[in-house]
Length: 448
Image (cartoon, rainbow, N blue to C red; front, side, top):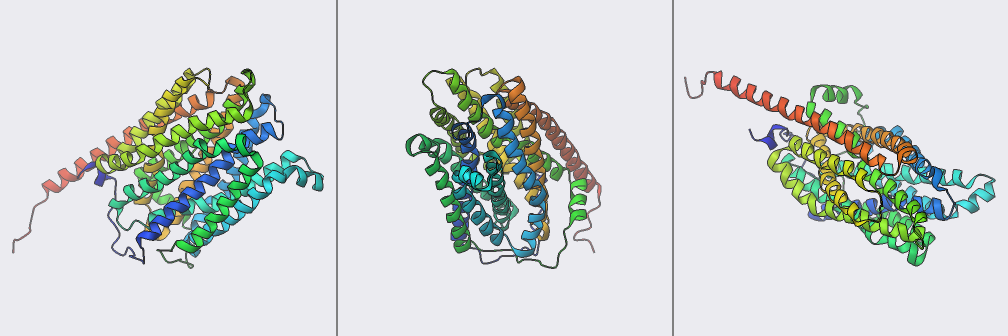
């Protein structure tokens, strides 16, 4: 038994073949990119909007930016697990369409938050909080179903790393496009036009999902939320436990980079004469865009690593690299220095594995009939991680400096790397025990 097959269960005998065509997968890839473009634009534009339009001061910038994101993640936390179960009952595509519509219309309203606040007699920042929560709620309806539909579209477990590598590539493409190109637009055409663009992209995503995607697994309206079944799986499957822990630590990584690095650049610009917040956001976009390029380039490599070495070994390598990269950010004093690119490159390569492999491992060990529910719990654990790291990171940003959220994240990743080594060792010992037991059994084949 090789490393890859050791942590990958066989395909169920009753797996559906469906009416899946190549253009359905291509449409899914495009929808993935559009979802990531929208979600990344909302996150990337937030620090710039709060500082440039609402006049948020540097003293509490880390806390407010993190607090907004934590509130949106709390909404995700309350709903994402249940939405996975709902997707098993009614299908993935309806949730994606409604989510895109909600996110798109809310994003179009966001630049008018001051007018809405004046009309209702409320605080402008409170209106922005509400609009951000609604945009995040729309995204919560979309992105978990994208991942689940990716699993539905892989009929053989051995195909899953390659399929998810393609999906991850389009996710990274969307992130890179935002930071490398779209984040140059506020300086050129203005912040309001850029925010409207996010809304129109979400509305286009709703049309794409409705028109070009197809359900593979039939909805199962009769099922109840399988909490006990999922809990028993997590208790009995150490690989599933590792994937959930990796979701806790790694799903927040790109949020940490996107939010706190953008905030660091924007407010560090006040110390550099002649550098505006918009120009600082543009420079931050280039740096984060480079990270996205690294993720883009390395995702196919991670697909091959996963197939060759196995899911657990790939997770361990990704956590090790990502952890070292984040800890190395603590050595950077000036974000405008080109030295920042060294840890960014390491984070990008390691993070590509942390994005791809834990979800692959979770899909491998999720029974097909409750795949949406298992991934709903997987995403719920990820929401817990985002809330935890954002809340702690926002406090560390204001109290100890802008690099402290990165260092804290890196230390946690390195600790989980040690646990991945334990899982690898335990799995290897179990494989040896099974092989030794099989070799001691008498062989009665061919004997009458």
